[in-house]
Length: 381
Image (cartoon, rainbow, N blue to C red; front, top):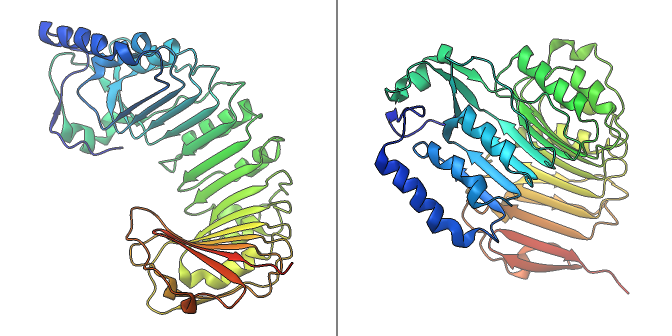
């Protein structure tokens, strides 16, 4: 959950002052001119304007995207938003602190709009409030863990949902069960993105039942010891796979994704040999992206063995110092390779320009972009 940079939060259940009520009315009037063409609403790192959320459905009734990130608001405000936004297709609910009136009940039910096509959840905490007048202290929020509970609100069939992104923040069997139940209720999913410390191995058996699922992005810090005894199902439908190369990756991958055409692997360079081994297990691979997660002192030699279908290769330096000279690349065995991209995230310093003598052997055109070095193979006519 976000570490709010304040020491007190105004009690969200305290009645509005006359001044705040006038402020709410003024905001509604000021935003009226944006009503017709506003399709997205983003609330990020906000803790003092809970009362304004109730105005959003009236001001922007036609929004299709709602992002609530790193903010504080009440369960009642969230429920009101979701009940009122009839055209909502994309919901991002992450890293928020959600207050709940304990005097009414310590239980809650969230009903998502059935119009949702994409849902992202993760790292949301729920805090029960008894006192409706005094401010909520920051130290209580951060340190009194018994006062804050993991948000659960995923027991619902959403017939139009095709993308589900979930961050399993705690290693909790209860949260694992909630996640599995939600997926079972939504077998029509096409894209599944999961990140967490430890997922139940039952997850893969459930994924096998998702006949429409083609995109799987799966990051897990460690697996149950039972993984050595677990018989991983073959997932024929997956076309795009995004994984992190860790010690147990081979046990999960093996030959269980025979139809993957697009592969993204995040890894530390000391696991290069494991990455090479993983790549060879995807016979239909057309696109490969390697994301480096750490700095290395000496140039790393990357030699791709023969991949009969590979057409596109990207190597991403996910750190500030990354430069072209960090790698020695040999792709001579990949006959169908058409393009190579060396990239960096835009939050890092740009690449230095290269002259053509620094690039690959003859037969490749080179194009420079600040955060991308792009090479295109020249095919003889």
